Image (cartoon, rainbow, N blue to C red; front, top):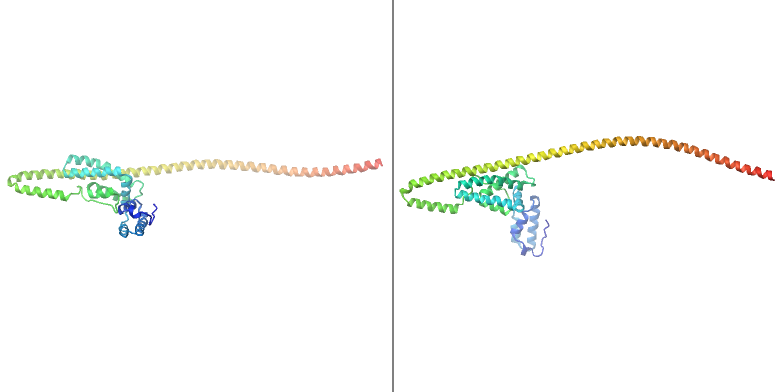
Length: 314
């Protein structure tokens, strides 16, 4: 990504949200330099306050960056998980045991699929992958965590302890106080009914907690199975690649041996023919010397014959 400090129109086209969106889309090693460039651009454009706010943006951990990346690259899959979390929290508030059981079954499959999308190709360590799983679990059970994950600007991984979704204290507390006042006003005649309702509510809540707990365990088991399957697939791919390389090496060695043998035959044949050529060249040189001697004798004989003929004619 290329940043242009002091570019025209910077202040009119950029705010902190836009800058944060760009920065948290970057891999962690590129974050600090890009943040400094953005802060410098804002300062040179005259907005010192924006520059200070940019410098306060924290560099994300690797696991947080992976979740931020998924929020941008896989919004549909991540949105499915977050919507499932909303339904799960609603079912918990309504103490709908049937809905909780169904949602927890769906949760394992959806969480496993989204977890693989987040970690795929990110080069995460085992610890970082665990942090990704914890962040996704927190986003399912806690609305605030879900909003942070959806925004794609996490700085560190999230976590949530417990099986039940996070409570919503304002609405729930007011309802509880109102219910308590009405219960006290109803007098002793309602005490038996209230006790029965509390008992039934407790039973339903226990069942709901058990359902959510089973869902969490199922989700974790699904992720573990998926992780084992991925590791097994990678190991199988490595083994197949090694076998292909070994087979290719054997083929290459066989071809090399064949050409070594062909080379040896060609060298021997070349040496033999070169020897023949050398011997023929020696014979040719000797024959040329004899031819030259013959030519000299022929010339002498011709010259002497002419002289003898002239004397005879004279």
